[in-house]
Image (tube, rainbow, N blue to C red):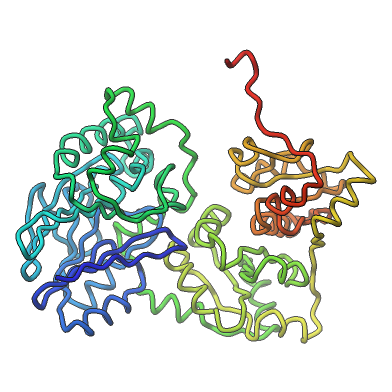
Length: 473
């Protein structure tokens, strides 16, 4: 028997490859399916099943393309949804055989109504692992508010109560030595307190996972719903793609790989109203970019920020990338349903610059330069674009929290006629923020390179953390 976790860090997502005696199964595959096909060929096995733990919200699964390429059967847990492709809708307790191993469906509604886990009985007849999707994470459980947008009469309270019983009635009675393999780890927006670990024993989770401790149903609901932030806007749209189907990824990549000269790129931008997305590193972008571009670097939490800041997955996009990374960018956009990349700037930004066309810049200064400026003027306007929780924990005294997550609201805090110094934690989000406002006519934002991490390390600034008021004691 072969069991392999295929973890994709940028999505904090775990897919799984199982193989036994000439047959294989894939659990929660990503949209680009070639690695699964290559692995099956290498092992000399036929992919028999594609198991989905639920209709994913944070990425587009590869189930449709993989089924077409292999003839494998797509399996979902119990659901009343009408899917737009051939699939087997399993019953609770149904068992599937892959070579000498078996997978048993355990219906665990709560994250979504169709959410199901798959219990692995290995080739020795032992229940050895469980693939929990977004029902049970390491250190957390799936958020119960996402399916509200798919089924009208559901509420997060109802889903949380389903989850309480799924965990206690279906999962916690299982043996402590079973290995838990979830669909996500730290960094995913599908939970709020996930561990960086990507597997653990069920017994240890019973000891350390807050959601598995002894408590009433009402206490569980309160704990699970506490502190949930609104999910990225693309989540409901990804759910629908996973239910209804989608264009083959190779078609999407082919469109995005269209190379455009500077003249063609400019004309396409003017004709379509496409978003110009520059995926280079923040400091490279600051030194020069195509006017009206927004910067979301490929080497950060790219998919999440695209999904947060470009809420319509049907938005047409023109790309500026580092040379040689065009296909990577198009693929990572397609993973989260952004299928309308019209092409990329041939030769990258240098070709635009060498053509003599207009360029724009954003001023970025070091922490030492910022310290010198502040020493002369203590009344500087400082924008902290980190999440509210980060700012709440510690911040520069006198700074204003204008979170990138809610940029349309944050813009209301900015006066076009004033100069602002902008920082995040490390310099990634502040450049995203500055680029978006620059494209909207805000010309007086200055980026602080290195962000709050560098600010604090310098020891040159007075910071403050939250002090609990006496009225809250």
